[in-house]
Length: 281
Image 1: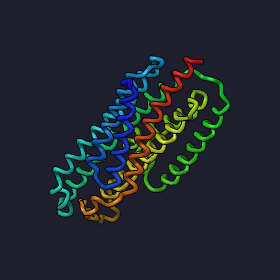
Image 2: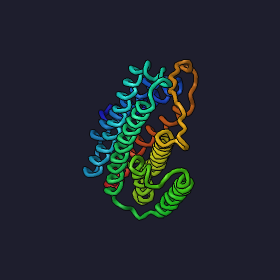
Image 3: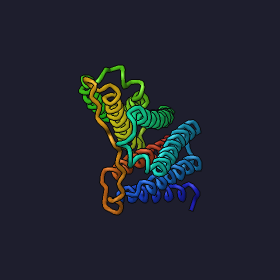
Image 4: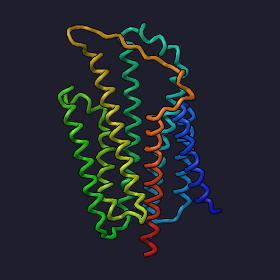
């Protein structure tokens, strides 16, 4: 068994375990297996054959996504250590609560920045692939435009909720990740492997970026409402931590984990396959 194939198998196995852990409401285990999956995928990319500029760009992208996963694991452990503070959140002063919320927003923005840089590196790998002039490139371009229109409509609906320039300082990394992933999707059809792993992976990463943008925008809006309440009113917000659901199926976190990990894996494998197929032809 070649090293690259063994690393790919290990990556798939760790990804499945991450999704299963998320389904069983075991977030720490899900984050740990997700990190292992990305690290094994990084090893697979480095050990595989292919055009050097493509391989190194993809490796940089996967490495940045693994760094984001490591940060999220560290932040989750820190949150567990502060369970006592979270449980008594309703009694915390308004200024302290807002400061804590702002800190969480800054962390999510940092994670979104890591996602954007990772997607930029993956997009550079896509651009580095030779163009084959296939007609199916039109299909991925149309699909990217449809995703962009859907994303634009959602963005337009939010304009009336808060000042336009207000959240941009927070959400811009996720916005950049969404636009870059859709742009790479538009180009991927002309460079796709025979099994279309690359375009499908970019579709999934586009959903991940849009979801990151939506979460950041919603979190900023909640912080903004608390920081500037209307008519001097203030709503006390408490953060509850519950472990009663552990062991019961949790579909949404499992779906999020599956989409994110599958997207990264398919883009990496698809880009390397496209590179090898181009060399062979």
